[in-house]
Length: 278
Image (cartoon, helix red, strand yellow):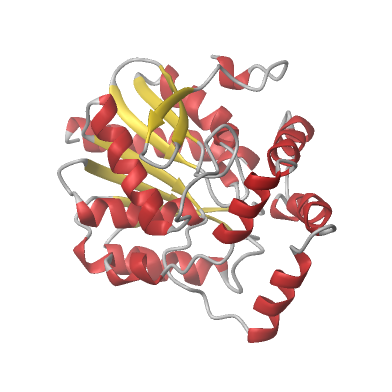
C-alpha cells in the first residue's frame, strides 16, 4: 500500500470540491468504509500504518487532509471543528457511506460533531488523543502560543516542538513525515490557515457529546503532552460517550503511528466487532 512506502509521500490525492476550495484525500482497499481525519498541523500521512493495517483487515480506507493542510486548499473562510465535521460528512456521502470515522486530536472533535449531526452516516468512532472539549489552560499559555506562531519564527517553532508529541518510540519515516509537514507550512496561505486552525474552539463538539449514539473507542497515549492528565481525560471522554478506552503506555499525541503494533489490532477488533455484530 502506497502509504507505507517511505520512498514516496503517498499516492496522488483525489479532490473533493467543497465550495470555497478542494479537500484532498486518498482511498485504499475494498470493503466497509473507514474515514481517517488528522489533527491540526498534521497530514493524512500520519495514518500510514493504521490505514495499511485496516486495508489488510478488509476495509476501504479514506485518509484526508484538513483544510489548509497538505494537499487541501487554503482558500476557505472557516477552519474549525464544525467545518471539518461538515467535510467528513461530505466525504462519506461522496464515497458512499455509512462509515466508521477515526479522528486524531482536533479531528476527533470534528468526528464527534459529524456523528451527532448525522448518525446515519457515522456508525462507529475511534477518537485518538481527542480534543472534544476545551481543556482548561492558563491564559498565559494561550498568549504564548500565539506569539510562538508568529512569523518569521513560527514555522521553525512548530517543526522544533513537533517531535515532543512523540515522547516514546519514533516511528519509521518520521523525518520524512516532519519534512512533509514543514513543506506544507512553507506555503504562505497554508501557514495562515494553520494559524487560524490553532484558534479553534472545541465547544461545538463538547455541546453535542450527549447526542452521539455511535459506539466509541478512545485511544490515548499515557504521555500525551497536550493533556495535564491523559488517562483522566480519556476516562472523562469515554464516560460521556459511553465508550471504551485504550491507553497506550509511553505514547504521546499520535499513538497510531508511535505504537502501531498495539493500536492497529485494537482498532481493527473494535471496528470489526461493530461490523459483524459480534
